[in-house]
Image (cartoon, rainbow, N blue to C red; front, side, top):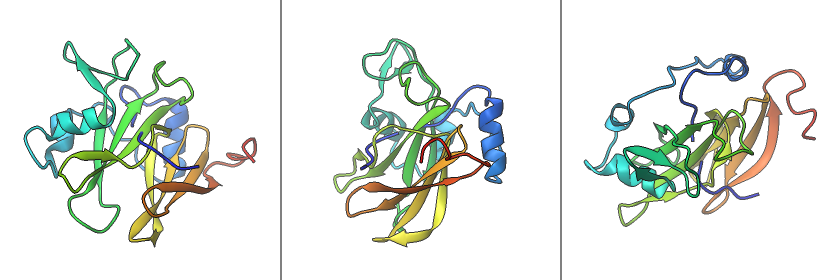
Length: 181
């Protein structure tokens, strides 16, 4: 399964998601970050936040961000991570649970990178997840990734020459992957 673009929760973190983050040993961060503040570290141009979110597939309407074909606004959050050992850092766009992405309870995320032309390009589709978990291995120069979900099962992804591919999963809570195997 190849990944294409994804996002992170905003608003109060649900207790189930909080338990998942605790199981990973990761603090539950304040969910609502100002987008400008979130992108201030590593932004490449003044238009960077808008260009990033538009490349992730969001549109701005009346001052609010929307997914295609959905009238419910979303509140994107962005984190920067160095995934391939080269500057500039890649971006992860997070969205809270939304009826616009009903197959993604808990939240969604999408990986983005600056392309050779200086524009943002997706490295993955929107995928279910509440936290990107960097793994110790590297393949093709890119870090292996885990995506924590609210269900206690973390899909694992490896760079496979142009895209991240699903390579397995790991339970982050007892029985977390039992229903998925």
